Amino acid sequence: MRRRVIGLETEYGLSFTATGRRALAVEDVARRMFRDVVTWGRSSNVFLENGARLYLDVGSHPEYATPECPSAREALVHERAGDRIVHDLARRTEEALAGEGLAGRIRVFRNNTDFSGNSYGSHENYLVQRDGPFQPLADALLPFLVTRQVFAGAGKVLRTATGAVYVLSQRAEHIWEGVSSATTRSRPIINSRDEPHADIDRYRRLHVIVGDSNMSDTATWLRLATCELVLRTLEAGVGPDLPPLDSPTRAIREVSRDLTGHGPVRFADGQDVPALDVQVRYLEAVERFLATEQPDDPDAAHVVAEWRRVLTALATDPMTLDREVDWVVKLRLIRALQDRDGLALDDPRVALLDLAYHDIDPDTGLQARLRAGGRVRTLIDEPAVRRAQDHPPATRAALRGAFLRAARQHGHDVTVDWVHLKRNGPVPRTIACKDPLVCEDARVAQALEEMALPTG
Amino acid sequence: MAGGADGQERAERPRQDAAEPVSGETAAPAADRELLDDVDGLLDEIDAVLETNAEEFVRGYVQKGGQ
Image 1 (tube, rainbow over the protein chains, first blue to last red):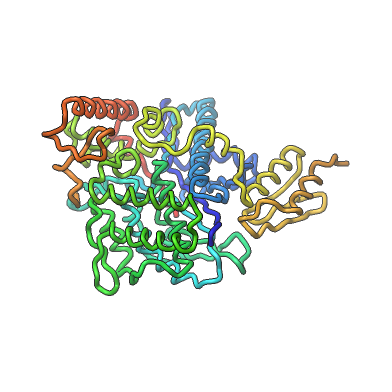
Image 2 (cartoon, rainbow over the protein chains, first blue to last red):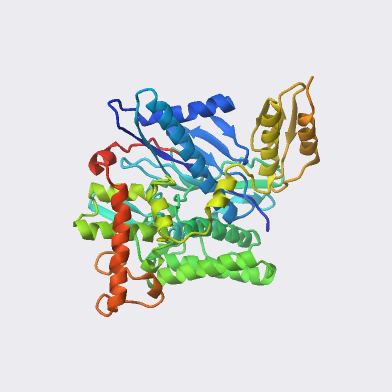
């Protein structure tokens, strides 16, 4: 499938530091943030005019699901737009709380773990065609997903029985299955729940829930763009010639704990392949596929070149990627702090730095400072992110966005979900938009015209 | 900590020379200065965001599990 939509769902972590006398539990902070949203969307689950969905998820996490994006780059832009939207929500709540004698600072973190063993995610969605069987596709993707932490890991100081260690991935220790329909009880790498949010005869939605929340533009983009190309290659039946993993859950932990990338990944036939070599096998399969089937795709060629550059750097000296691979950027920061202050890896200041790396505050957060100081490589600029806060991409999201905008402008009562656009009155009418790739629809155009007509 | 990218082998280096390996002993004085500036700059950024009581903050940062 050459064109597909990609989406990212982010669960945010929250903290509240009271500056007055009264404290507030984090659940209450989350509820307060969404009180505003509830009034305006009549539920704690709303769709926005950029086509995205904002809601309060399981475990009191604000969650932002990007609209359907036509490329990895747009998904990156829309994920960052989500950061801004959630940040603005937090600021407004802060002001409201201060007015009630609950002065304090709400911090929002786009990371995946707290310090008590809880995890929350960054979930990827890829539209795939239903013509092939799902399980073999998912299985063939697992070695890729297990080893991509070498460039997509967000880095973490992990406390173990034998002391603190620095690992590649925030998420690896919280994954308990390869492919399954579970979510919070026994988190899989790929969630197989069949909810396409599209024409069920044509499409499936591949739901990858193993990913770390990347702060780096390069890492976010590469994570999505490489997976998209691997899917094209696997769908064409020309993936790398690799047997299934011996144990995906053991492999993901082993890869996460090996900062060299040269450690072995065990396959079901007993062979051990270094993690970086597994990535190279996928890269080469993608290259072969593109060369023969899609040689006219410059964007794909660029992804492959960047993927290769990053893998080569990782194989020789990962620290050269200290501006673009999150676990390397973070490790460099941690080491600088450790060296100056003589801190052990399990020092609370190191833990705080590990967390601060994920602070989304666009003015005072560590990321904002690193970006402003030119200390990390950026792929997208501020105007693009601002624009994405209220402009949908050219997919089905554009229909949803236009529908919501017209309803707001003309004061109509509507209800929408990923597929349906429903006008609740005067005569209830629902339009089903079953192709996520389609951004023009005569039925929607007509509905917009009708909404613009004077009522009465 | 697992793996050789840890500990002893600290390969921090100035950005401009990223393509060629630099070891601590042979780095040019100019590159050394740049390296120091860079680390100081990073530490300034870190100090600016770590002003809270780290231990208390870390103990208090408890979320419920998500998906």
